[in-house]
Image (cartoon, rainbow over the protein chains, first blue to last red):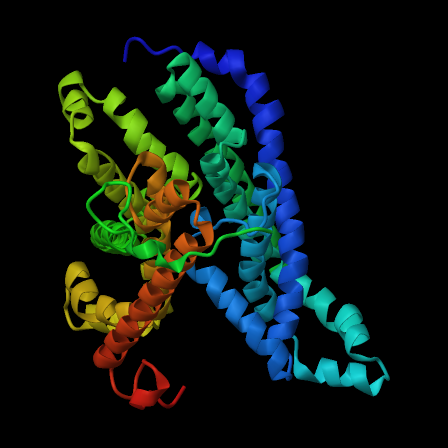
Length: 211
Length: 252
């Protein structure tokens, strides 16, 4: 095990987190937010009784879920960073929409009818009755998907963006310290994902007790 | 946007000077499928073993299985592939590490890709196998014990045959995920379908043609996988018990 220099981590830790992790978390946040909003709309479209709404949404979700994230080019040239945000949002929307569809379907039909009986229109019923409960029921799964998204953002490596892995890889190649840097990157990803999943598990139990 | 559509590009000679671009894409598909198949075998065998371990009455086996799953699920696949490709040869004794590093091009990235994808997917398969076994009623295992079966016989003859049938649908999605995930191996130099499409884009600038073709191929592969798995599901279904509704799996 001679010849390893773990000081390289200490020397570059500021750069790794200030540049790299900041981008990773920003991308995760933006893509999760955009994905959940767009995904909820897609889920509502899929559940619509109008064929012209549900068919395109179903097609979109199935298409996005059948191609790998890494190989998808953005249709417009906007630079690597914007392109990564757009791609991740469009992709994650398909996955979030499946979660939200399950969430909406978990609300008994009677509640929608009750909403209509009270004189609410479709949007009011959705916004005030169905979606708040659907979100609440699905929070653990939405968060789990967001942890997967957090891990998947490492794929922006192929766009040469300085996310956390990109930053680690740049230092690794500059200093010839591949072993140290990649082991450290793995450790950081592991600790963050593990902690988050643990929190989600506790949250899940709490929600389960209330219901 | 001024984009020159050129669908004839598929029949022009590709960067290697021997094949057409269409053939190049299919060579990529070949690597995608080979990698997925080899990794799938590892994932299925190891995942089943881990899934079984996590349902046994042995505490240490459960802990070991859980630790494996936590480890492989909480590190991004890309980082895992880097660990197998860049880090492992350095940590092994010089003789073995040197031998790994001196492997010829396709194998140098193929072997780490298969190991990495296999072990990563095994963690997910083991979750499903465990869920499948736990979905069976307690009575089944107990009936096995009452019949005088040993622990391994109970799994072999009672629990696993039913558990595998239950988890066929999620295993289908996992197979599709595995096929998609092979594209991550392009980062360690595996020339699979996405890498082929990317090289076509870089050499010809026909980005839309290249990725439309790749997308269509991925969708076709998906459709074939789904139908193959459905066929397996139908042919192994136990009549009147579990299985797709069209085989008379009524009562539920």
